[in-house]
Image (cartoon, rainbow, N blue to C red; front, side, top):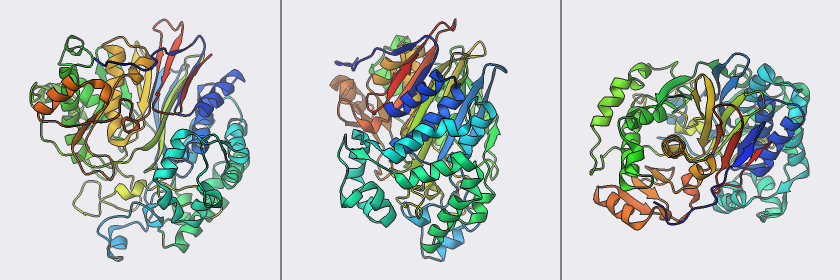
Length: 535
């Protein structure tokens, strides 16, 4: 057990709940609900605000994934708002430049069309009650008038200063007058405000077929980039059927591939074969068993995950109960398995909203690395993602680069239902750590009865490589304690003890809905600048 705990009292609401990694975004969503909007209006308001006030983690130049539940039809739906590679984005294009891998920064890393704006329009116009322009007002205001620089954005700006200085338009925004804006000082993004205002007034086509697409494509082509106006015009996200598994009586929903969401379902169904509660929260057995279940799930993810339009992914087998039982039997209580992992990015923002009618939205968005490609397109103020750099240039690799293809995606919002209604909404920032943290948060709420705030505040772990760190370490927060750390090391885990509260564990948030619908509780990660706001 941990020797110390962070504040573990959840936020409570009788009507609605909003959680996100930035308090201003949470407040924007809560305000929309108070003005008569529903969960879908509020979720898009939160998403747009995060694209402004958490620009190192997410933005209009990135992607998003959505899980939605509308109380009128009692059905969970998923929206895939991730972009495809451009028609010129082929292995031969990079080979011709003498490259053996896609660059992780710069114009050549921005080879997938941003899906974020499409996701906003898809979700809000299908289910929202308010005018789209009304939902966007707060985000536009924060971009135009500025907001206090958050500690997390400041820390990431310091860490990525040299990347930001490489590109003039980026440097002008994120390092005004050549300086880093200090925490609490006002940070403005007037060009981004103009782009947001344009889509609020003119609609989706302003981004994908109008002046924004033209500005982005022109800026990229001037720098040798591969995306064209046609790539933007042809883009569309899609409503898809979510994948489903079960854990201790709960139906657990995730977005299907190209999301890695099936990893969490696999791991949970493996854990069903163990008495997690009897192990004791925070014990050696608790951490070891979760890590081993995840490693087995990652092994299959690395073999199969890509755009399902380009490869067969055997989800029926991977998500079957007999396969989970088979994998569970391979876990040895005192021995770590030697399974490899791939480095993945961590700059992501997860949020969730539940309204008074029971409508629920669990969503996540990202630029991939911190500040994405580092390349801001012309005068749009839009920082482009580098998600396409995760494609392989090996033509035999399942996730090899091909034109008009979606890449392996780490983003994975979660929703757990009981009796056909949402019971928990949860997710996290953190690339490789997303399914790991989801496992920790969900088992804490289900197996140990923790409220959402305690579930996200308790000590966490992350196994495997984060981008730029080629290691198979098991990183654990110091609060987990020396005895547990020693036992994990003795079992063969490459343990590295981090700070007692460490940002590398990601920013997790969760909402729990009372079974009788009488109230909601929410938790925002103390490792973030977030807030849970109920009403």
